[in-house]
Image 1 (spheres, rainbow, N blue to C red):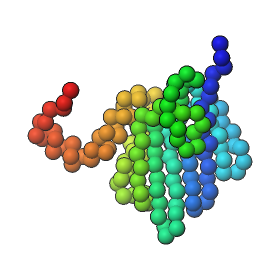
Image 2 (cartoon, rainbow, N blue to C red):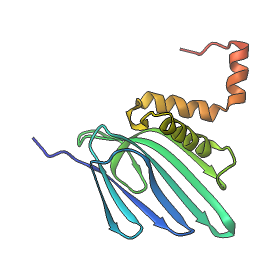
Image 3 (spheres, rainbow, N blue to C red):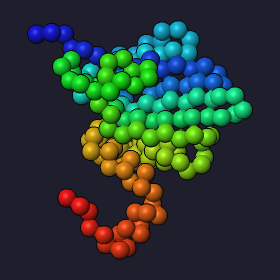
Image 4 (cartoon, one colour):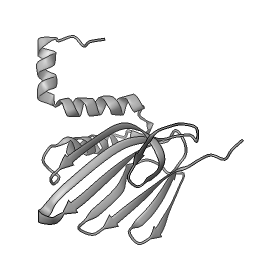
Length: 156
């Protein structure tokens, strides 16, 4: 039997220019590699959330959030920045511009914080929960409300 492959996420912080961080998840182990660099390891099957933020000249910004799942050695997934070994991506959103614009990243981060403050553990929610949550966020409430009002059936 081969040893378990752990998925490694390297969180980085560079003041005023870069932040790669863990939104949620309980790593199998964690250590600070050096100031501004934290390393987290996850076992196959563990779900965790990651945020990436970049600041560019002229105060331009880009942020992204992904909800991912660590995979076993024989599974195929997607490569993402700072995550070493491919992962299953259950949800991903991005947003240009600063926080507070009610964009997809803002809405997903708000949902994660609401779940935590309500006593729910985001990593224990199913992959389908995260996929459906992001679909609702990306469809925007106005579109979802108008579709519900018209009782448009979903295609199967």
